[in-house]
Image (cartoon, rainbow, N blue to C red; front, side):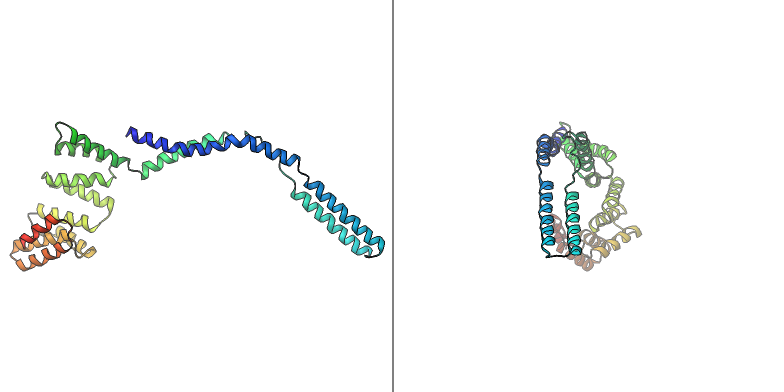
Amino acid sequence: MTLLWIAFALLLLPALWLLVAPLKRARALHDAQRDHEVNDRSAEQNVAIYQRRLASLEAALERGDTDEASYEEDRLALERGLLEDTERLKRAPLKPSAAGRLAVPLVMLGVVVASVLWYQQEGAEGDLALLAVQREVMTHPEGSAQMLVERLEEQAARQPNNPNVWGMLFPLYRDGGQSRQAIDALERLIEIEGRQPALLAQLAQIEFFVAGRRLTDRVQSLVDETLEKNSSEPTVLGMLGIEAFDRGAYQEAIDNWRRAIAGMNDPATGEALRQGI
C-alpha cells in the first residue's frame, strides 16, 4: 500500500510542475509587455492620421469643394473616430510579476486533496487490500481457508460497501458449510450490486439446499424473479432440474438440465448435468 501512495505522488508531480512552470516565465513576460506598452506609438499614429484628414477637409472647404455643413459633419466624424480609437488603446496598469503567486500553492494543495478524495471514492484501494490479504494467507505457514475468512471478515468491517469482499466471502462460507453466513453475504452483495439474475439465482440455489431441496415460497419467489429477468439462467434451471428429479418428474428434469447446459459456461458443471440426464 505504501508503494501505491508513492506511485500516486509521483504521478501528481508532473501536474504540480505544470502549475509552477508559468511562474518561472512571469518576470520575463511582464518586462516584455511593459516594454511593448512603453514603446507603443499607436496613439501618436492615430493623431497623425486625424490631423492629415482634418487638413484635407479644411483644404476642400477652402477650395469650395464642400460646404460648411458637410465640413462640420465630417470633422465631427473624424473627432468621434479619434476618441473611439484612443479609448480602445487605454490599458489597465500592469500588475507586478509576483502578483497571484500565493494562489499557486493553494491550487496545488487543492489538486492534491481533490485527487486523493477522488481516488478514495473511485479508486481500487480496497481491492488492493483484498489482494494483499490473499497473498498474506497464501504465503503464511499456517494459512487456511478459515484464516482467509477471518481476514476477509476484518476487511468487510473496514469496507462494507465493497462488493468484492462479499463476493469472496460467499463461496468460502458456502463451501465451509456456513450456510447462514453465506446467505447473509450474498444478500449484502445483492444490496450493493442490484438484483442481478445471476446473484438471485445463487441465492435461490443456496436457500433451496438449506430448505432440504424444497421449493419453499421464498425459493419460488426468487426463482420467478430470476426467470422473469433471464428465462435461460442456468443456475436456476439446474436447480429446478434437481427438484424435478427428486419428485420423479424425470422428463421435466431432463428438459431443465438441457436448457441449463445451453446457457452454461462451466464445462465441469455442464458435464455433471449431462451425466444426470
